[in-house]
Amino acid sequence: MLSLTNKNPIRALIVDDEPLARNIVRRMLESRKDFEIVGECENGYEAINAINAGATDLVFLDVQMPEIDGFAVLESCKESKHLLHIIFVTAYDKYAVHAFEVHALDYLLKPFDHDRFDEALERAREHLRFENGGALNEKILALLSENKTQTNYIERLIIKNEGRVFFLKTDEIEWISAEGNYVALHAGKKTHLFREAISTIATQLDPRKFQRIHRSVIVNLDSIHEPQPWFRGDYKVILKDRTELKLSHRYRENLMKYLGGSL
Image 1 (spheres, one colour):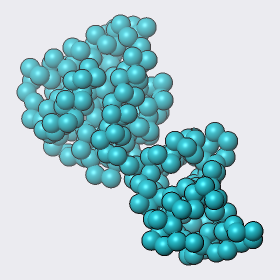
Image 2 (cartoon, one colour):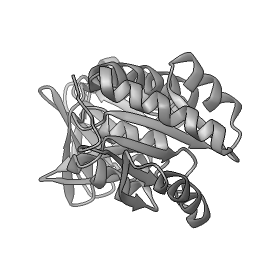
Image 3 (cartoon, rainbow, N blue to C red):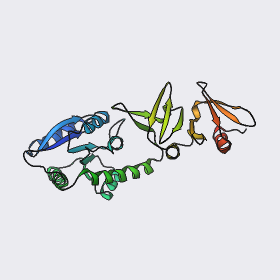
Image 4 (cartoon, one colour):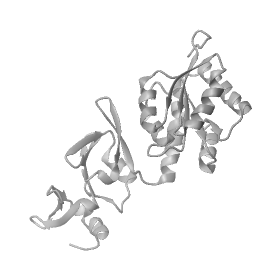
């Protein structure tokens, strides 16, 4: 349980790609003595690094940002112990507003006035006085799960490697292999480990672009050069970079349906 006093002001981070929007939030916050603005971020990359650094209690998070939107920021930070309170800032978005209300997450609808801003701050104060981050994380996980069902198939993955966080577009992935509780994402000359079961990630990828060819292998259809006979009626899949992958009997028919042929 947190104990915030005047000696320990609430540390606020402002995230918005629009300078004017950041200025509005900053001006409204500057007159509140129990808040301290610890940073401003103009894109999702900066926001992820700032949140994971753990120097914030409250984040004003713009939902609609180019490249990395507010949902992608949360996806990256969803397991962070530093995610204490979020106030979403959004232009009118019927789905987003409904989702925030359903999951009891606070939001500011642009343009907002001082009264609505004060209401959001008071909710933040109450949350930070009497709750820990666990309740918020549960709400955010529910929101992200709902958001995934709306967007159907993922188009990028958040990769964490040696303290770095970056996004890998699924179109860049040539094939995927199972590695225990992880999968290895093969993209050009680089391979990235991603904590997800292959059975789970297979359901998240667009089947028009990715197909499973073995219980432990998924392939990007655009990366296939040709299927090739092997031995005893088996086949292998030759990729454009000459990588050879085994094609299982179980997945052969489905693969050829998407390739538009038969074996």
